[in-house]
Image (cartoon, rainbow over all chains, first blue to last red; front, side, top):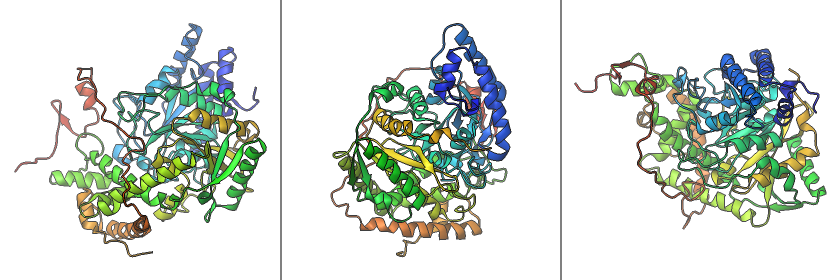
Length: 489
Length: 96
């Protein structure tokens, strides 16, 4: 058993202690609340936090256990949700002024699934506004800091989810990933983050950004914890017509049965200009580890990689401009006090409610869909998307999974890129292809820079084969101790 | 970087239902100009005969049985309305 403080222990460790009667859900929740209060003034990972509600859930969990009705490994475990995932009766803001006073009238499907698994849902985590960004600086409620270096960003858009977990203010969290928004913050904060196959997790109750790319996924301290979380939230949902009806394996148990050796592909386009040398060296070491374990390592090519960023910013903004049309100041959300007529309500409510990055993306998306430009931009991007997806499927004829860096650079300074949207977009160059192709991918820690910043390794898997992907990551993690190092806060 | 297609910020802001300040128009035009300049490289890709992908996996229409089911109570549905009266959402006058 780990000697780490409770707030840095894993679901696997904590649930064993709870099952053995050495720890109660209330004690654990109190420890996480105390830790949250201690670090939150410096990290600002949460948009809101309902202490009384969390403790009530913990009391209920202990009640179930004493009645012999524990729901399993997650029963009594404090789990934080990104503030784009609905919990009935709780605030849901998407880190936007537009929804500053919004209270969700219903639960997301993942919320209900976690509640059925007994998790203590204990806070709504900061993110870039409407999940648009790579640093959590686009939050209307202020940026989140990276627990490893408070002057740096935790990445984004799910920066609060990653920072809360890295800081010990949650035992596991959920985020959402449209272009890298789970994997990049996981890499920058030194934890595991999984973006599942498009369709594996219901999006019902997730605030929509770009519907053909959005996917909810878990953050964990370890691959095993990530597998436990994935098992709890995966599965078909009639309320999401894009959710896929497939058998959900026991991801945690499968970690022990799938051992490789695997054929692993190294996409040469992911190791070019712009890759930080320390990040590159750490990833090369990880590749050498797999080779030493008997895995066949093969260079592969994803020739349309250079077009991923542009394709993404056309498709994602087009979908966003349509999805965010619902925020009109009429039925819910911010309404201007200064309107002469109905058009004025729309235009001023939206101008007052949305931040700069959201406005930029709505404008770009509206432009690429507008009459005369649709074929040149949107339709062309959809065709290039076909080629990008085909690149990956071609690679999977030769290899089981791909290894790449998650982010080209480690955590950057707060404010460093916020004035230059294009520089910020380049943070996502290794992650967005996965969303365009609908594939599963995870980031796991693979070292630290000389200045002590975490580095992330990305493993990209095949559709609906998360069990293989997690097992491949688990094999690396078991041989390295990166996840037993914690930030000093 | 090639010269991007002209982005008429007034027209696109109107289509987007966003009231932008003159300062925002200038700033967003410059920023979006550089992004559109980057995007221009997509024109180099040969997409002859390539089908567009709207979703990563082929989606068929999904049908649901038309059953009456419990829905939100009126009070819950109206909870977030900016202005309400007599179980209705109040909006500015739309007909003169």
